[in-house]
Length: 75
Image 1 (spheres, rainbow, N blue to C red):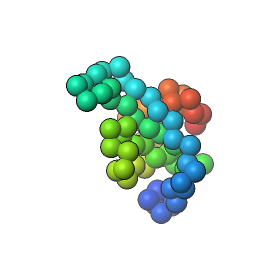
Image 2 (tube, one colour):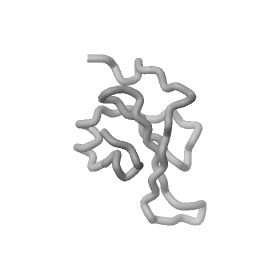
Image 3 (cartoon, rainbow, N blue to C red):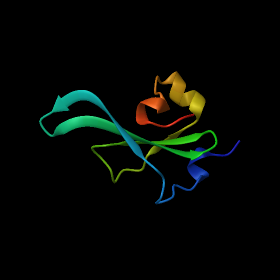
Image 4 (cartoon, rainbow, N blue to C red):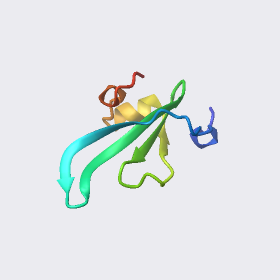
C-alpha cells in the first residue's frame, strides 16, 4: 500500500470548503477537502490554510463521519 504522505499534493489540488455552522469571534470553523488519488484525500483546516493537510483513505474518512459529498466531491 502506498503511504498517503508520499502522494504529491499538487498546487492544483481542488480543495473544497465545508463549514460546520459553529461560529467563533475569529470566524466560522471550516474544513477543506481534496481528492489526491483514487482512494486518497487531503483534509485541511480552514483557519490554518498554511498547515499541511492530513491525509486519509476513503474508508478512514467514512469511519470519521466525513462525507466527501458535503464538500461537493464524490468518493
